[in-house]
Image 1 (cartoon, rainbow, N blue to C red):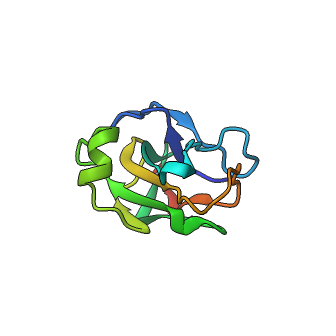
Image 2 (cartoon, rainbow, N blue to C red):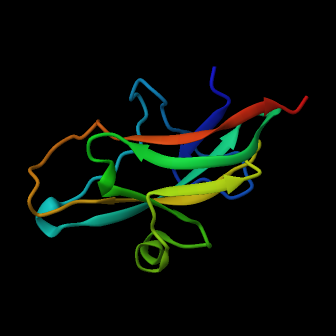
Length: 137
């Protein structure tokens, strides 16, 4: 059983809100709709946190796996909005956090499209949160 989770739908830093992103079954995936004819990009706020009574020892790495993982990036929050995140954030392929515990650590996810791709429902990419989770009780 995983004790570290990712949350979408505008989670609050330091809170316990948001909708949990499905981990394997794609019942509630992180979804971004882009217009490839415009080479569109969008930023979405996401959070990582552990179940109550658990915390990550050391670092938590946030990254993407899958066929089109290169079209996705992550950035620290810095109190951005979805518009300012696109232009001001430092986008990278991997983000590392310390002190992931039972409250939200917010970050941004950016999805990009290119004019050379056909419309698709791409389910090949996975957003990963990886760390050594230990009980705090």
